[in-house]
Image (cartoon, rainbow, N blue to C red; front, side, top):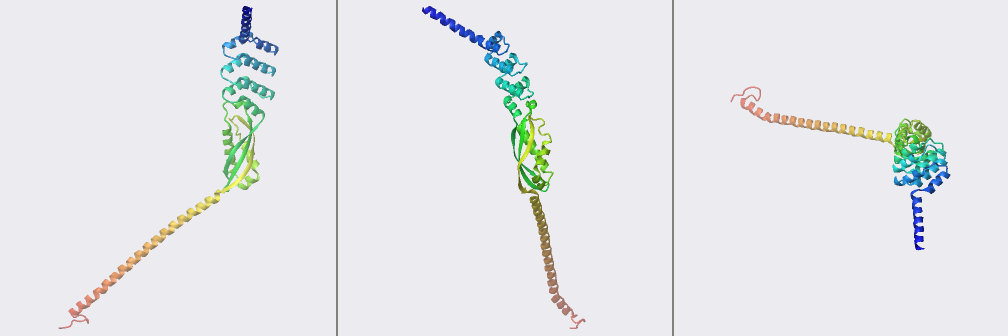
Length: 299
């Protein structure tokens, strides 16, 4: 009796092990789902360290979705390349239902590039908004304007691999707004901001990026400082400093000239004093010579 129980247990354990190694249930599920999978191929997946359930379920999903030209080798290859196979399959189904041109090769390339392919497809179907940081520009009349922009984009599946990201879009939009504001006066910008956004949009700023720009909207424009007036004030102050320097130079020269004149006056006074000092000497000499009164006087 005990021997019979052991035999039955071994048979059951062997059957469980056999059905685990050879996933007959998966094979039956695939057959009834309209997917042609070789039973021995499922068996050898165990040795390649590929989960047969993942491959079969993925193949059933794409088959039911009507996606063709996908077989087990492609699915195994992507799994062994450390790709996110369920994400790729979901992305393919979403893209197919949304009539997006996305092949299995493109989807796997996007996935292996480190991008979320399912999110990319969803964003391609449903656009989203990129918030551009505040942009500071100066109009032709020197008024500083601070603008806030909103860019509505959707993913460009064909350029997702190798395409530039959000930061490039933000930088290009900011550059375009600054350029357009710099060609107008501030009143024109405040009255018709939509013209700036239209012109910026028509410049093809999404070239080489992973996005397609649908619209650029200027949400708000605030007036900053008057750069032109500030520059004029700075120039006037600089001119005043130059004038003051020249005036100080002229004053210094006048003071120097005054001191020179005073020195000459002192010199002239010294010569006068010297001449006055010579008068008594001359009188004394004339008296001694007897020529004091114009003729010699006899002693």
